[in-house]
Length: 151
Image (cartoon, rainbow, N blue to C red; front, side):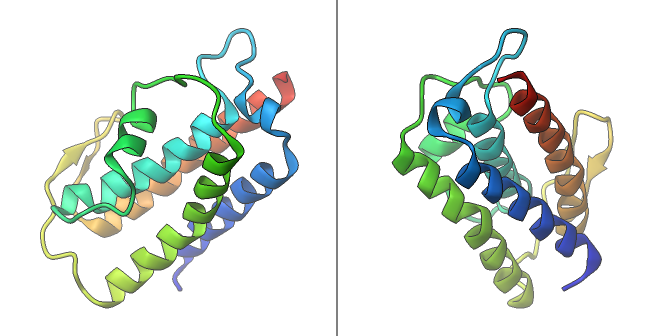
């Protein structure tokens, strides 16, 4: 596994730990001054990875459209998530990375629809999407740390 993918896995380990250590009520809590909560941020990184890598490659995503619509960019929590939803997100944090590794090894990524991210940088292929995804997940890890401190 290369360094970029190692960083992705290490970040996901941290996120999984939060899901195990933080009580469900606190995962759902939106502190004053924030527009989302810890669980939204974690689910958002799961969805974003799928959008950036699979959808922009014209391939089926490994998450439901319902999940995408709840956690994509410019959404906010619609209500509290259940423990069952937390458990699903927990499992997806690692299983989706394993699937992505298999798909890279199988060389299924043949095309990529260029996409300009909020920084003004344009992603042109899957390796760039993976690198940007690490940056994106780092931003949300920062939000999660701030949320954890605020609750």
